[in-house]
Image (tube, rainbow, N blue to C red; front, top):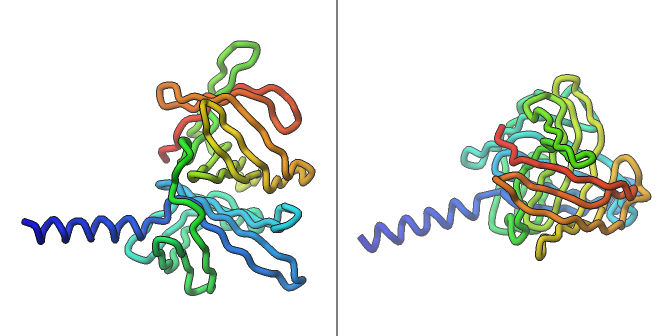
Length: 235
């Protein structure tokens, strides 16, 4: 019985160490000597990667979609790709090596360091914009449609992406770090595809979870009021 318990414990630890869930980052220099930062966020079923200038925050590239891991083979279905929209819908399978603090893709010689494992933020996961309040009136949107606004969060990092899988269109993205403390959701913008002048901004919102929905209230980076409803993405 003791041996069996020890074996199960090691199996559990091995499984945990192989999980990509959380945030990972990679720094490298491009051909011009500019330092580029790549950040990958994995939720339980969805992932996104963003590349941006490590100093200025200038946005360079992003892609993402669903993922599954079978041993050391990862399969992704592309939902958006800012450099090549024709990749949307493609199924991509590649080898990945994961330890507690490193994630490597041998075929590309990419090596990422772990930023977090989904903790400590209370909102880790993939969320879809499902509605908003306008003049006190609740307006709901269908999250099953191809046009989606998704926010994916690890324990410390976030990225939102607006995209349309049917039209294979990318609408915009932004990301950075976040905290959830005493009912306040605070984020610092590190890149913004639509407006680089927003980089460095700190935004604070009231938030709470109501029947599984994330209620989000504050002001946008333009200073406009917002009161949004987000639901956990399931498919």
